[in-house]
Image (cartoon, rainbow, N blue to C red; front, top):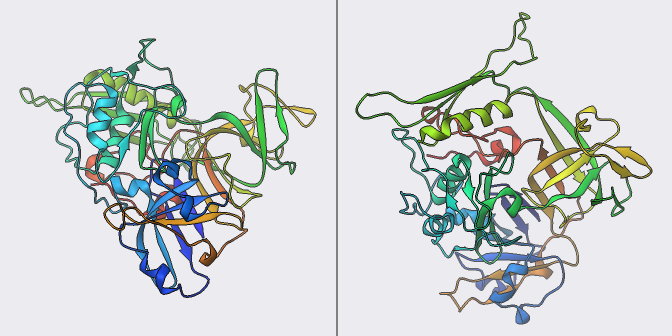
Length: 428
């Protein structure tokens, strides 16, 4: 009934049956199948693989029982929550961005496509990519890809060479229905400033200013301010020099306003694998300091609809409540919002949990090697729910996977939180 999608993660899904399935339907569910969810009616006899990318969700089925089926997002094929995965690619030297990703990801039926939201992106790496030698980093493609995109300095675009400015110097990836992997700069990957989540009840009212219009989504907001991310000293380390035995580092400090119980300034230090390249270390340390300079603000939003297609993981959207001071941004552009001027907080969508409701379609796709990719419509047997969708957001781009094993240090963007705890993720 519930489907959870996680930014750069491996969200889970679960479907319960209304009753015991007929044998003909039960026999069509085989290991390795995927489910496809459409937010409109569609029949199995009209379905073919050309329509897969138009699905609202596709996931891998990993368990099936008498009472239901469950599994994960397609990213499971690139690396499971337990750390198991199909292996890594072979790129180790400077290559084009597309060449590297394609070499890494063409496994288990995954195909690579440069960002599908906007223009094709095929820049070149601006620096050798890590990780730092001696960290014992061995991972599935999903984890390696995540690390590469976390530690890259920037790229030269096809038409306008240069390094993207923060936060556009960060990169991400996404695996969409149809098994299509996209990877690239954030601006190319996600929707920006098109939606506002607020506690104002009118849904769909178009508001904004002279240059921007946004779509209001009513929600009940739970706002949390946390100091767990704060750091006042960061050290980024690179490759150890084989001749001198010296490990290059770059350090920096913050001046934190938060006090420890004794009244002195709170002291928190962080050590980061900077990607193995000396030229990157200053930027890596600078990014980590910026992320740890102020308390992190997160929002759990309970929306008015069970399936909210206007919002997805990675989107950069506005969040507003007149009663929450942490959702006011003095530096933001003003928006005309129901007759008043507001300066809403811009936040990243970390995860979305949706519910399959009446009127939607659920299909099961058998693997190509089994029945030539036959589709089975199981919609009439699925227990539906009208419970509202929930969205978890943060004020910084921080995919919610857990920290590495202690011996490997931290990575840029690593966060704990409730989502990561639920994943119980461990990358080896």
